[in-house]
Amino acid sequence: MTAIAERFSATSSAGTEDPGLDLAGFALLLLRSWRVIGLTMALSVACAVYLVFTTSGLYTAKLVVQTAGQQSAGGLAGALGQLGGLVGLQGAAEDREFSQFQALLKSTLLAERLQRKYGLLQIMFPTQWDAANKRWIEPSGWSYELLARLRQARNLPRWAPPSASDLAELIDKEVVIKKSLTSPTIYEITYKSGDREFAISFLDMLHRETEAAMREERKARVIEQAKYLRSRIETTPTMDYRLALVQLLADQDKTLMLLESNLPFATIVIDPPNAALRPQGAGLGAYGFAGVVSGAVLGVLIVLMRALLRQPQRRGG
Image 1 (cartoon, rainbow, N blue to C red):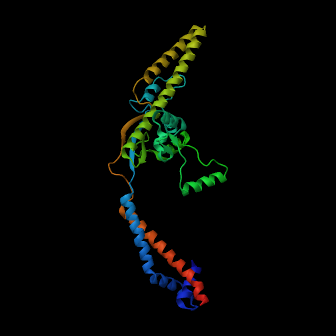
Image 2 (image 1 turned 60 degrees about the horizontal axis):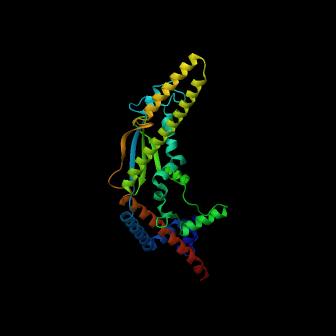
Image 3 (image 1 turned 30 degrees about the vertical axis):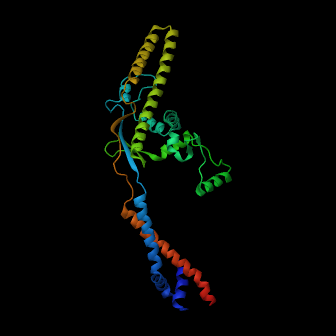
């Protein structure tokens, strides 16, 4: 920057050797070019105002849940925890249930389930789906073409149709789970979209299907455990052992009964998914300030480039 200032100082002072004129010459150059800088600032502000009125904001859907552990009344995990001695189920009411809930919510396994039931890939990646011909299409455009060539240079495929792993990655990036400041057992789950109704329904679907998948997995595991206990009862000759196994089998039957209920499994909904009626986005003031700053910077750069290009011509003259 000092070198540039020295060149402008030489231009403005016409050969003066006083280094104290460096900044003065630079400032004088900017003052003489106020029309250029003002024009770029005005254009940038106009573009910012245009974006404010033409770009739709995002709706933030929020769901508030509480972990359904032993401390939470009404949760299936708490009810299961009271059974205590079940094989593989002891401690099911602890926070590990919610840890499993978080991991499953953003997993490829759940993404595959959502695709089977709702065709969510076609909804989340609409620009790559040809609804008329029922097929995936490769994107186009110079930015995509540049990225595709870079992938090819690294011996990677140009493009592949969206898959369950892409959907899981999208959910992981856009769905935010944050612990509430009011209680260590309360969490806020949020998702942003330009469509308010879709944001609400998507968050509700995501929570509902994650709960259902956890319930089904636990039910399948308990059925397998019950089957194993029945086989051991039939082959155990000692009466005391048989009675212990029968008690465990009875506990498994109680667990299956609870799993058939409508109790929440890992999370209790405190506040159902909802979103404000107005989208959220940067206001006119923020966009206007950004326009002023970017316009001023662009104007100064244009002035500097013009002066640098004219410098050799003046020396030659």
